[in-house]
Length: 505
Image 1: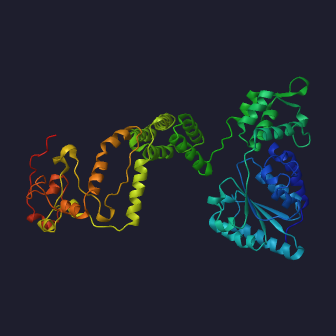
Image 2: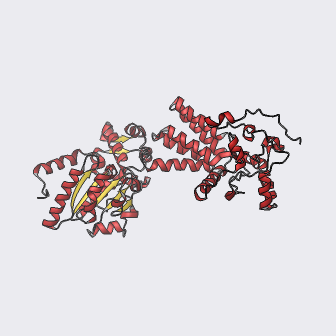
Image 3: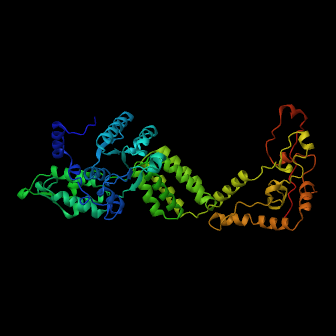
């Protein structure tokens, strides 16, 4: 039999709680008309407001920051509709509690044709198995689910459950809306502080609203603490000053969760501020993250990535500087290490920007994945054994240091990718110099285009008098360590490097 009836003890307990509850709980709006904020979802004519008034509810997820009205809205729905209301907290409830609630909902629907709303606070704390346990009953309409979460449902709510519930996004309350709530609490004698003769100084009101960060619960709890701790003055008045509010708050209500969506949003803002060369915004977002308790080593890793991805060869000093900042964070800890991060993000923000290496590597990987993996050209292969030499390994290789400016025309790609260009340096910062140094590629490309494919192949495979001597291992000249199989080591001649025959300019 569903447990619908309240006992005498239930009523007495609720009455006692209504008197002793914190101000934020006592001042909780009871109707949509009292509800402050979220006009984009419960304003006049909006879908959710019409659904509540018409008692035509559907399963939903309320996603918003603390103090934005998620639980309040769920309670208004419970008081306004004719459905039975069951509230669970994902922190303490388990699958057994869900099964009990579902069984009672089934009995209630069969006996009295009454629907059941199940409100699950902090639904993101339910694991996949717990969310799956309630899924069939949401799908067949046995229960109407209202889930409240401060975390992005895209990550924390199973896709199957999310697809059966409409997601409503609640925004942080504005300063004006917080002001309305504070003023209402000061004048309400029944549920608020109206019978305490509280006077809130103008500057104290502004400070309270600012420091609450859009969280109505924080604002009301701080106001109540300041009022109750204040000794009545002349005429029994309690004048609340900025110092009183500061003592009550201790610290600003921080809107940051290093395990939640803001973690990703803030690092994205920091990265984009650096990329857009805005050191001021970069310092702000860095401070927001560190003040919110973010792991400084996580930020350091991302700062290193910024140096690689967005500065690159435009300023080759950026990468070692960010590595040094990471080492400083690891060695010094906080707060000294925070300054190293600040120095790094300012340096990156003012540095010339280039993603040429980043995009070049991405293009190279695309060819690796989407083209045939041709063998390494023979002239680029090691030839550690006589047998491999006989197969043509290393034949025709031109030792760059024997040529003017150590630049030599020879193909390094496999035949199917001949002539590919990935890296195109910009004209910013050090890459302007890199661009000049690599200008010879354009001349080489133009020269290669003027030759026929047969002539190019012949030139690649046929040594000329400028090549290394035929009795000298080209790989040895290149200074690379030969990888000689043990069984072939005996037949491999010991080679000494001849003197350089570099051409005079």
